[in-house]
Length: 204
Ligand code: VGL
Ligand code: ZN
Image (tube, rainbow, N blue to C red; front, top):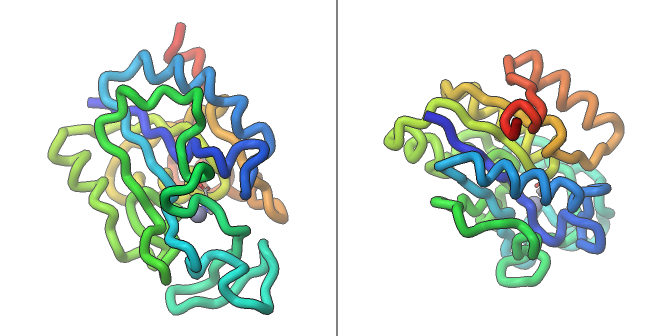
């Protein structure tokens, strides 16, 4: 059984948003077409409380894109984004969310960021998605969304680690690219065994 995993297509990750991914919104039409081809659609939503420890503004002496050491390891600091209940945290207005059967919210604990939709950034705290997929006998996840080098990448790596067959649809993801993080993400995902495909292979 297969499912489409739609990662973080939210206003703050689109042009005009607080942490805009370049051209992030351009994938929305192709993601909508892909949604029509899947019976099971799962979405993720970055969902931070104000004052989240991944926000540079929570420190006073830090700037966005600096790195700090937290209890669980190094953490990139971001502009305030996807704050619970704000417009920026809402899904892109043109994204078809009607078919989504489950929405995994992540990053809701103030002290832990969560890029992956399987585990928070301590690499220990589960979101519950793994159990959900296993109970529903879903073995194959087709991944699309934002951002390739953060939430998409970590979802793909952890999905493989959890025993799922992970596919990434190359023309339906977009990255942030901090100091080469985008190239590195593709290297890491391919090394771990992701299957890279194009939307045309599904939409044809
Ligand atoms: C993301 C940085 C911070 C993402 C979320 O969705 O890739 N990146 N929070
Ligand atoms: Zn975030």
